[in-house]
Length: 144
Image 1 (cartoon, rainbow, N blue to C red):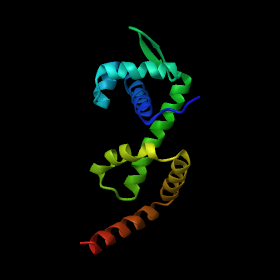
Image 2: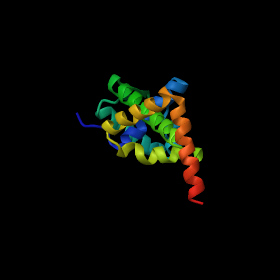
Image 3: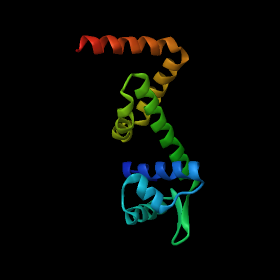
Image 4: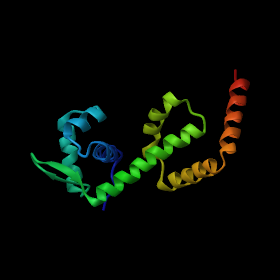
């Protein structure tokens, strides 16, 4: 079974998020969120149906399959984890979303698991986060 491409992952993640927040996902909502044409969404939905990530019926809509739901859940976990990681290490808040979008498809699941370990390490003792912030502040001062 082929793994989803980065583009497929973006669609699955968006569909998963829409279903979680609204209870459904429409082509127009996905197109708006991903800044693509509705016709592009329809083509991708058909591909996702062919690869068993969604069940699609023309003119009736689509839902995530069990496989699609599992992938969507994992992709949202990855996205949220990377946002949390970048926040912990001191990346400027206004840059975090774009940075996550830029890196999330380029990391192996092994790297994601290690980042998760690191996030959990920092969260286990909040003084670790404070110490890292102090290092960041000292470096900012030194680099001015």
